[in-house]
Length: 147
Length: 106
Image (cartoon, rainbow over the protein chains, first blue to last red):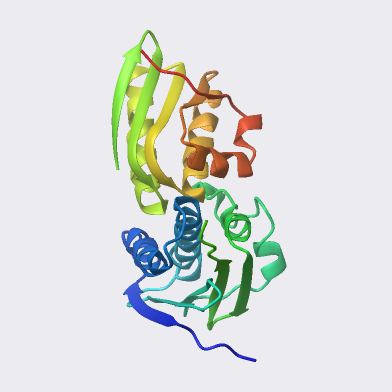
């Protein structure tokens, strides 16, 4: 049965690197309503930062004009938080390769190839759906349990 | 983010303050490299004790500086990362490539 979220949020902003900080702060502010531990909050901030950085560095790499990033979140009565980060960029042709640790298409940009690995490690669940030429959505799920 | 520097002999200590993400890493990378070249450093200490946030861009920043130092026969060390920052660094195995030291630097 599909659960109804207790609360939700949505935000949209242009793919500018200065907004990486904005994105993780807005997600952190939302999740703070659940009174998470410092560690859980840091995990969410890091995962969101990775997802948004991917949109800026990879999805919109060759695109000009307005490049929107959409972030939305919801939390449920059981403490489960779901955050989605979506772009309308180039898409990923080989998701399996993209999520492989240390794989990067941009070594010159000093990208470590660890973005998806960090998202996976710091969340309970991470999934990627993508269509080449249309865009990518990353879905991050983490259960916030109060100590 | 801002960085301050100390030079002792030919060992440069760069103390980073604030948050490391893709936005700040791009700026920090140019700034640190310029300082390394200016003082002709042979050793580099990256003091991360005052870093409050670090994502995979921090890995790129640290690995890139290690690569630069090694290319000229030098070395690099990470100093005093918080537990949180160290977790990110270890995930990529940085501790197997260079020392992560925890000490008071005086």
